[in-house]
Length: 224
Image (tube, rainbow, N blue to C red; front, side, top):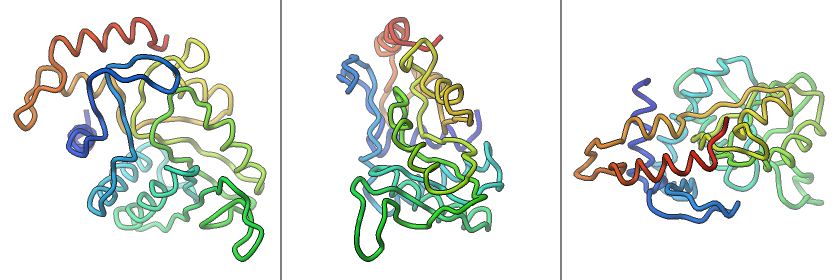
């Protein structure tokens, strides 16, 4: 496992973004782990988060893209933090773009904020986590309606590795449905492997009992 992925797992735990226990998800599933990117709230946290995203995006998509699109609302700060980090780390100016939930009819009018997209642009979408892929149903048509663009792929922070609407993971379903790549900084398998029975700052976050709960969850909801 790459060192930045190990660091990112520790970073999620430190920021209390990734938690272990008993949680009821929006889907109704009872999960032994939960990730909430809304817990990244400080300047230092967002700076580091942007760097982890930038490294993963560079690893999977290189420099051959023009726009980083962050769907409203959580995708807005993610896209801003990541393009700033991309400039610092790789010396390339990537434009950020996001959508509004409500179309603005005055001033900087329209559905977009940040950069406009134009014909020929290559776009990478950035999100926190994708469980069912439902957000792409709204996001992809918005982007494609703006101009004749190419969507290079999607980057999320954590691949939960559970079934989407069918038997495949949400990221695999996105690849199949929309024809572009979908990747994550880390997978839940990475997290489990790294934290299982490993003390971190005096705590063991995935002990035998939690590991068993995670295994049961994937027996019920894991992607094929």
